[in-house]
Image (cartoon, rainbow over all chains, first blue to last red; front, side, top):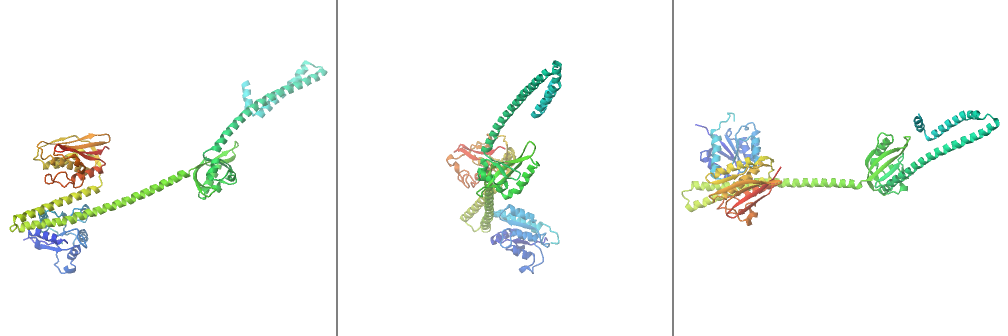
Length: 146
Length: 455
């Protein structure tokens, strides 16, 4: 049996969290999702700090990152991940509302693995989230050290 | 031989010439007259008498010669003198009445002569100036350079000295002068004086300063405006960023929850409830499109155009390919002319064709014999392109509303669209320095024209 990897969802909007989880639950991926509310919490989770200092030593299979968030935004999280030698190889998918050319360029400069727009249409949204979940958490192979 | 003698004599100066002639004549007379007398009359008494005649004759002849020579010489001298006087008069008039200052200074820079214009420039009288030196009325900043160069001029190291300098007037105000100095020597090459010509250029210098100042303030104002515009542009960008993000998110949520309701509770929802949910979903979709259109429109406004030489035929074909995919089941007669090369932004101009052609396709929908013509007219400085259709057209009295944002001339239930397309087209054509307008007749068709400058 294939071991399902964790998905780290970094999203501040509870509605988006709920809709994303709904979408992932259609493929039974929802129970593997860890939700954090902003960039600071995401880094605490990834670096075993704060309330996450006791969690299992295991990196997620993919990080789904919103861009606009309070405190530390998605691009800052991406930069922090890419400059941390324990995290730098982690797959990161930007999952965002708006297509802004400068954001897109900046994310790819920082080495993002994918940049996905949340479609307004829910059917398309479900499709997009499902594809990300299935591909990164199920199909994609990662090097063993991460 | 004779002419040689004459030429040789002419080479001598007048005083030498007369002395020489007298010397030769006297010498020959002494040599030959006594011998001739001896030969004619040896009588002693008569000899004395003859000698007296002979001496008198010599004096008469030499006096006549002397008179003739001196007279001729004096006449030519007087002629030259009168010519000199006339010339002197002419030049002194020129000097006195010259519109620019003229001065003569000696080797100690003292003024020896000044004209009226120079008095006017400096504000001193002639008598006052003649007691002063060039140094007294020069601005200290210019003085060392001027003195050095005028000394070089006197030493013939330079032929002429030109400068623009400040003079201090009698009332202590300053005046700008363009000075040209040359040195004057006598026939023995001894320095006589410097001739200075001074033109008052205060007005010119002040005008130049004024122009420079105006240019600087203009540049400064342009820079200020540019900064302001950049600021406004940045604000607009931030605004559209937050519009795009903050307005879309709630729409997505509405859409998502409507869809969840539809999926999870479809059994317990009455038909009416399903209808309401569908209406909510349609409206959110519509609003999503409106937001996207508005954002695109604002992006077009802020985008710098990337100019390149463009083959309009290629551009038109690309736009046509996109449109024909959507209307493959319709019968449309296309009449496309061979278009010229233009200079413009490839992507933006393709958007123009796409908009105009899709409008033509849309508004000929009811016509079974739809016909769309694309062509151009070459004018003196520009090309006038047009897209003509035989669709439903519009009433010309509403033509002014055609290119406004979200302005529509047909109901959205008959013809879909947000009303942003032509506003966008107009922006693009404006940015290219062209003009766009339309001519139409209700139920007969419409023609859209736009112009692009020739390059």
